[in-house]
Length: 133
Image (cartoon, rainbow, N blue to C red; front, side):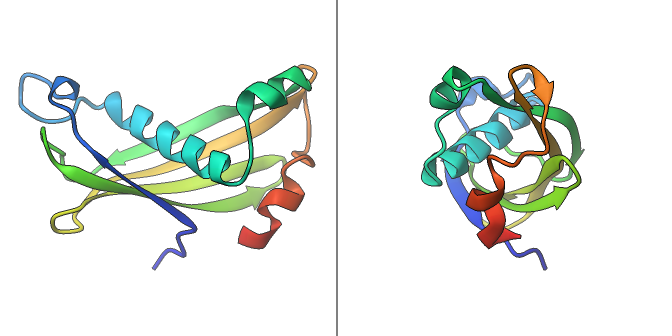
């Protein structure tokens, strides 16, 4: 069982569905990103402020397993936990359909931090995330 540190509840909008009536595969990346950004905002991290300081956290790799499709109007919950792997912070993210907790998506999102355009070890985030590791 994963030790989730954050969750965000959302609802599928009709325009996010394809002709089959299910959420388009690419839309899940938006859901995952929105949940990460909301988590970071809750931790006091502001991307505009960071960028002005020359600090840019970026996704370096994403792996998504699609399990159970979401449909228009479905409520769902994005949950995440965090790993530190060398220079990477890896977000392990799962999306569950709210009505029955069916797993919709399992994702591994690897991120790195650039400082003035150069790869860093992520030192800026270590004190913020240490309580979750």
